Structure formats: structure tokens, C-alpha cells
Length: 491
Ligand code: GLU
Image (cartoon, rainbow, N blue to C red; front, top):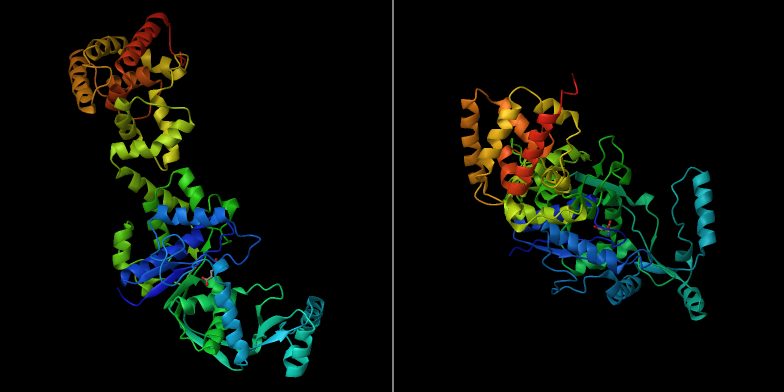
């Protein structure tokens, strides 16, 4: 184990967004690559918007992605509690330490006064910032007002000078404290400000590296000032770019799925999502696009994380998902498809399942596509369709259908293996060739007779998965159709 300690710190005010999942992933990869520790910290200080349900769903989604933390509310650890709502005592001690050290002071300014100040500063074209009014009170005045029970917030006294840090992704960044007014660390309602709680937690949990989105860069200046005032060492910071939609706007619901739960529901595999999210801002610099989580852990390197915006290209995600789907064994694929089939009211006999899974495997982009392709095994053939007429009334189809009935009657059971199906089809092929038929004029009428479609799974899957009863009755209907129909739709 190395000393590296990172944290993923979601606020449970919604389900896990792909952007946050990528933050979790980069933290996970960074920690695992170095043999370090990843902490999950639930930042639930916004009590109105945080819910236990979101808290649980975030943990479930992380687990689904394979990004379990080493310490956190669910697994425990030596630096808990891991929910901010349970850490008020630690924040209060931090506030007391800063007040005692002269780094923080009570502020009695009512909100209306602060709003007024802001309006004046904006009207003057100045950056709004607290004017330090309450800092100018004498200690006696402060004591008297507190003793009288007046409500006060606690403000941090921002020191003069620049704050600089060397970002792991952006390089050196400097902020002038001129633009930062004394900010509130404890509100009048007793709640603690985000920047303050984060600092107490990062210091208390001995976090060595903070990897998070670029939207937190400006917070870093405040957090560094607080750490210095508390006498705590600063972690290294790395701010990755945010995920944008292809049109350059912020990725939102109007672009489709955005939460991990949405993608799981559509039938994306966790391995494909992880692969895709990793590559949004990172690449080892060669031709490869497919990486397992293990490979990512091995190769991930902060130096190769780009600061350019990460464009969410769903086509690439689809392509990767297809690759991972094609790697699944038939049994596993069926198991993953099953909820989607069940939702569409489709059930298959255990003996059919692997054949059905294999038959549709090449066509699936997401698992949710399964019913659309698997229904070929269940849907009735519609003999009225022109395709049926046009294909079956072609020259030689009647002979073929007879040969097929003859051959397929020999199927050794209701459902056969794909190997047995291939063997029967080979014999049928030979017999058809003997009648002067070839290639497409054998496969196409047979496919249409068996499925009513001219596309779909390979014939041997239909033969293996449809069931002998259905096969023979469909061939019989096709032959009857040929015998009783005068011409094609075209004619
Ligand atoms: N809770 C913050 C968020 O969800 C993250 C804070 C941090 O990483 O410092 O945006």
C-alpha cells in the first residue's frame, strides 16, 4: 500500500451522472495504479436536496461499474464517519480553531445588508465581495452582541497575497486574494459551508490527491487558504475537463441518457461504459481503444489526461458496447437480456435460450435491442406480406420447400443444437443442388418461409431455436401458399 489517498465526494442530490462517474473512475484508476486508497465521502450537507435514496443509488452504481471505494459509509474505515452530515463535531472544532487563531470572526450582517452591498458593487462595476464590516468591531462589541443572543455567521479572514498551486492537469494556476472577500464558513443556521467542510474532511482523511472537475478550480484557492490557516498540508489537485455534448453545450437530459442508471437501463455494459469514460480525456497514445478496467489501472497516468473538453460521442460508446456484448458467452448474454425480454413479454424455454442469445448477439448495440431481434423466434409469420409472396412464388421455391420439409422432419428433437442444425442444412443444401438450385435461391425462400423476413439471424439459428413443430407448420403453410397463390405482388 502506498500513502496515496484520494476521495470521490458526490453530493447525493441526484443519481450518479456520467460526469461524476468519470471523476470516480479517474480517482479509482489513479489510486489503484499507485497502490493507494480511494475514499468515498458522501457530501450531504445540503439537507433539503440530499436523500438517502440517492445516497444508496450512487453506491449501487459505483459497485455496478466496479469502482468500489476502499473506505466509505458502506465499508467503513479508520477515517470516518464518511457522511458529512455525521461530521458536524469535527467542523465545529475547526471553526473554533480558526476563531481562536484570529483566522475567522463572527459576522452579524443581515442578508438584506449584504444584498445591498452587492448591488452597489455591481453597479460600480466592481467584483462583489464582503467589505469586512464586522471585522472592524472591537472584541467587546462582539461579545456583547453574542451575549445578547444575536445570530452570527462565521467568516474566514482571507489573507492578502496570491494563492498558487500546480494543477496535475492544467499546470501552474494563480489566484489573487484581492478578488476573494472574507467568506462564510459557518452559516447563521449552524450549517457549514462546502469549502470549509471539504477542507476539514480532506485534511482529516489525509487525502493526498484531489481529482475532480474543472468547475471546482476556483474553490481550490479558498480551500488552500483554509488549509494553510489550519496548519494542514495541502493535497495535490488535478481538475479534469467537463463532459460536453457534441454541439459543445453542457451534457443534459435533452441529449438523451446522462445518468449511470439511464445507461444501465438501456442495456449498456459496465465494462463498455468504464472503457468509454476513461477515454473521454485519457489515452495512452497508441491505436488501442478497448481497455478492461484492469488494463486501465495498469496504464492510467495523470500526465496523459488532456485538459481539452471531453465530447460525449454516443456512437463510440455504442461501438464499444457492441464489442463487449460480442465477447459474452451465450448463457451470460441470455441472462443479461432476460429482463428486457421479460419486459416485452417474451419467454423462451431453457433449451432455446443460448441459441436465441447467440442468434441475436451480432445485432445488439445495447441489451435493450434484444426483444426487437429475438421476436423472430416468437412472432407469427404474416403470409399476406408481399415479401412472402415475392420470394416464395419464385421459380423452384416449391421444390425447395418440399425438400426442406423432408429434411427438417428428420430433426432429432423439438430443439436441436446449432451443430445439428448446420448438419441438417448441409444435407438440404446438397439435395437442393441436386435439383439445380443454388445459393440465394435456397437460403432466401427458406428464411422467408421460416421467419417471414428476409433478414435476421443465420438460418441454422432459426432451425435450432424455432422448434421443430413451428418449423414444420411454417413450411407447410408456405407450401400451401405457393400452391394456392397465382402470382407475386409485383405481377
Ligand atoms: N460534492 C462536490 C460535488 O459533488 C465535490 C466536491 C469536491 O470534489 O471537492 O461537486
